[in-house]
Length: 497
Image (cartoon, rainbow, N blue to C red; front, top):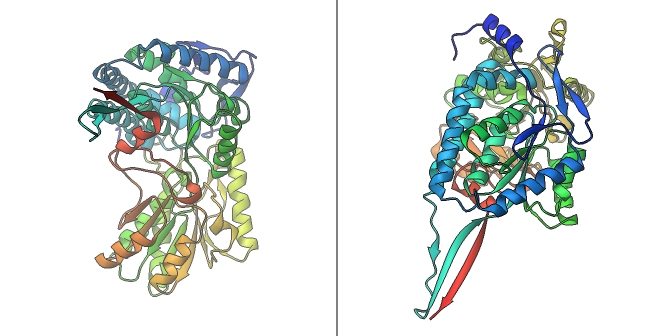
């Protein structure tokens, strides 16, 4: 963690230059309509700047530029080693500008500067570098056919990719799409969330400095129902990669079907079960992990362990430990390096979270701690970590993704019941379990219908490990070599002799 203090970051914030324009065809530009929207900081509610509000005409311009860049072959047919060098340079530039980008991330979406600086921005650079390093190690194939023929199996870039990313980890999520899409030779149009556009806009300029050819990367800020919809319906977009809510993911599938049947890859919502078995010998560690699982990033995490299943045999011992560790995730000023939790992204999300808290109480759950909006004097958006007990898995707070620091504790009596509750959801993004029984760990992990299962730990990951969901948590995978499959076409070329 940086040794800089809150005063340092506040001074840097005052000196920061913020750009809110779109990036199309290698330059910053206003939206064709000249329309903008306010970028308000969740830290204190102040106006950070005006952001270009792109729409159909801007999408058309960006797609035309992306297609021209792709067809030129300057990037799409460049040697893998050449693309690798450019992406290495971009990764280096992100690290050179780590403080600037971390500050933009914190001011824009409210997360604690300690995590923007030490997790999000370096992790984004690492994601790009990992993909760049891999690209010249992915080989074609020769099929085992009759000796009178030669059947070559090659991989080609899919073409123009639209990447629509969420507001909770803006640059990190963008990098998970950009890394494999750019490394494989595609042109990419990045549409950041209207709630957190700043790092994506800045990244475009860094990409140009790194040597990415004009038109290969476009950045279109704006709303989902305008420019996002325009990209999803565009007949010259070959692929759409999305991270966000399940509701939006469903609509994007409709748009893909209504247009050109573009391939669509979705990393959607979650309501992850986090299970603590009685045979866990270190309940202190489990409680600490459970608190982090809902407190990190203010609970605005798709894999947040928001359904906490606790064996009734250790329930009374576990809950006080959990309450103790939740205190470490009380919100503080995001620019204070000592703060672990920062601000909720905006007033709309604050109200959404508070509505869920009210719904939990109305349905009969017990609000054991938290549940209040705090730090109103800052002008920002802050909510205490909130603990509900007496929760049934049929309650709204146990069924729907809240995207805030709200954990619902559900008792269970045996392994079979725990697995049944865990799987009783239309989501399947992640799960966690704590046990000292190795056989149980393997058995339960195999039964849970989720893309990632954490055992005796929670959150974290590596670029070599695939990430994605089962059921209505999406399809396809980010990270690992599997991520490349989303952005390539497989071609068979058969030669006869």
